[in-house]
Image (cartoon, rainbow, N blue to C red):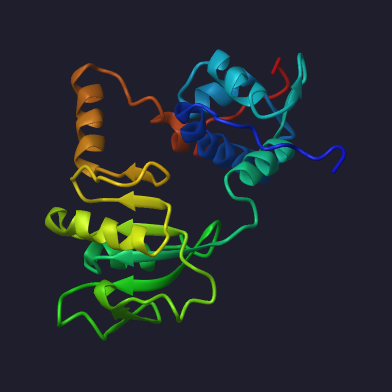
Length: 236
């Protein structure tokens, strides 16, 4: 369609990881009534350099005019579009312990791009119970016939000893995007994307910054959005 944005191909992983940060900042700036934001301020809030901001945003389309800053509404809308937009992807979770229950009961799902459609566990005391309105089932018993739309995302909150078996089961279901909280490297087909979420690593990064006398790169994000005034209007 003429004039429509084209999805960029093969964005670098660091750029993809920063897009949600830019999107959250832009959303907050819109909420606070800021029409534009400079690359300097956006970088300061995101914890990266202004040059990194300009490079990231130039790779996904025109956003600002030199001297005017980035339009916050357009920035929020465009980054949200790249990160899934209005699409909702059916999501399944395996390992229904405290972490999974916290995720299920959080506003994370159903708000943006993921909707939980199935829960799995192997514990006899958990299988057959209901969490968040869904019955916990055994992944080994799954045949996929009850899904209106096949699951697209699989989340692993199971013990490391079970992670590979769960990943295999998810891949057998046709799932091609996995997020795992289990501290184990997974072997998956090349077409499957895996994101590792390791709290211990994040804590090590935090302690590194504490030891070396500076805050983490993104440490100023919420502080600045919640407290500090945001300057607008300088060059993009």
